[in-house]
Each structure stands twice: as structure tokens, then as C-alpha cells.
Length: 267
Image (cartoon, rainbow, N blue to C red; front, side, top):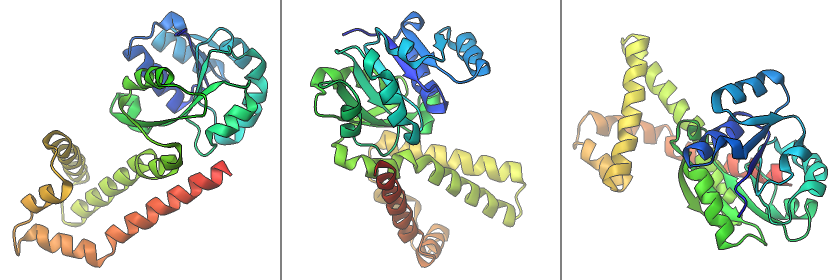
């Protein structure tokens, strides 16, 4: 398969995928990114040594892999623009939320392989996770290429397309939930008399260490939580307060709201 990569819309996520592609082995000479400003173009050229353009049609011409990184509201117009220039053998990968693969398939030449992807912002430092799901024409070979593309940004999992809105709610939006928790934990530290710098560092490293322990140990979160929780101890008192405050139920409510909004975006 032609490995030339066109990144249409090199915003934060598009740039993260571009950087990941380079980490995964793509040559800078085989990547072109479309941008709206010269300042962004200069940044990409100087940082990654890739070609840039404001012409989406020129970018997709001859590309074997096309990443759609524009906002959901702009996808329809983009497909109308690039459809005549798409290589019949190209794989179109989209990171835009909401729109189903069928939306892309209707706007592109018949038989175009489409793969939907839901990455998250830690992709920018190679610590993300991306869920991918195939459209009607995408094959195992296409999925393997897309997995390779996102491998440079972190872990990759495959899901059914029907599950991508739930993925968006958990991992796509998930970093914001973690930042919310970190901020709340740090603020609690300040309330208890710690300096803001110390409280922030304690909260950040605690979240980082707990995540690594959960990942590397392979143990269920409940078992790890029990190891910290002595009967009648400080952690037990804290967890009881969280349960009394409805924190667990609030996470379920938040994730459901995010999923429902993802569905609305695809409507």
C-alpha cells in the first residue's frame, strides 16, 4: 500500500498523529499537512520537516492514507472538496467525532475504505489510546496500516463502530475528567494547608503513579483500592465521603452525557 500520508487539518490532534506517524517510521518526505495559517505551516515545517499546503485537493492527490482532522461541522464540505482527487486505493481515516463511516462513504468515491478513530490528547506525548473501527470497505490490511499509524501515539484497540460514542465518553473525553480530579485533589491539599506547588505535585504524581501501577500490575482497580484501604483507616473514611457525595454516580452521569453529545454530533 502507498504509504504517503495526507493530514487534512493539522490542529492539535492532527499534529499529534503526524508526530506519531514519524515515531512509527513514516518518512517526513512522505507526509503533507494542510493548514490555514502560515504560522502553523512554518511550525510544522521547522518541527517535523514535513511539507505543508492550504490546498486539500493537492494534499490528497497520490496519498495512500488520508487523515481527516477537521472539526465535525467542516467534514461535509471537506469531502465534497477532496472526493475528485482521492486515490481509489486510499484509506480515509477520520478523527472527527460523531459522523458515522457511512457519512464519509456517501461523500467519497464508491468503495473507498474508511476507518474511524477516536484518539485522546495524551497522544501528543505518545501516551494516548486510540480506538479504531472499520467502515464497510475497510479490510484487515487497512486496519493494520491504521494501527501502525496510531502506534506512535500510544496504545490502539479495535472496537465495533457502534461502540465509538461510548469510547469517546470514556477515553476521548476522559483526560478532561482526570484533569478535573487532579485540580480538585490539589485544591483539597491547599484547603488542608499545603502550598499550591506542593499540592499540585502531590496530586499529579499520585495520579501518574496510580495509573502506572494499575497498568503494569494488571490487577483490577478494586483490588488495588482494597490494598490501600485499611479497615477503619483514613482511606476508608475518604472513600465513604466520596460515595456519600455521589462521585461514582456522577461519573456515570458525565460519561452518559458525553456519549449522548457524541451521538448528537453525528446526527
